[in-house]
Image (tube, rainbow, N blue to C red; front, side):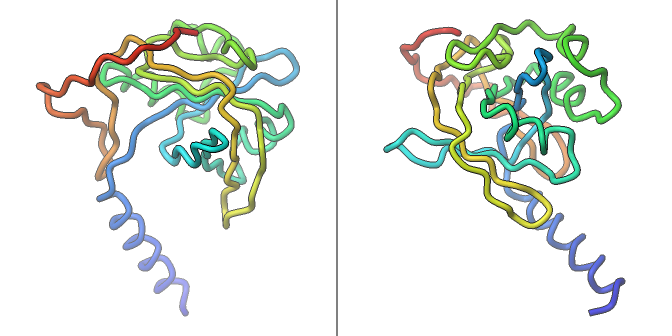
Length: 180
């Protein structure tokens, strides 16, 4: 296959994949005493027994070595008012460490101490269970040690290259659960 054909095929794959709406999350960890975070929309709940989640991390990203080395991470599911947060944590030029979290209220996750963004709609606080190579990413599987709903009303969604929110009439059912 020629380079042009490969580029066209990759572009078609990306356009097709963009038709699948995803939630938007911020993946966080702590290494060398400093918090770190990145936006991730390749996140899924994986198993109920045991309680597992998974997130894809780009091989070239700053999180690639941090998350497996730390052995722990948290995932905050963002709310529909957190578009700026999603963009900020997606920016590779953002500040590092605590400064990266200056615009977002957060608290240490109850199980791992990894930052949980308290304006989100839910969180998963995890220990790394496994890391699987997956092309230009790794799939990090985490055991959910602590988790729960947060106060946000509607989740932030990403589809066709843009942020969106569910219909304004959408209201999730009340969920019991602890805040971090």
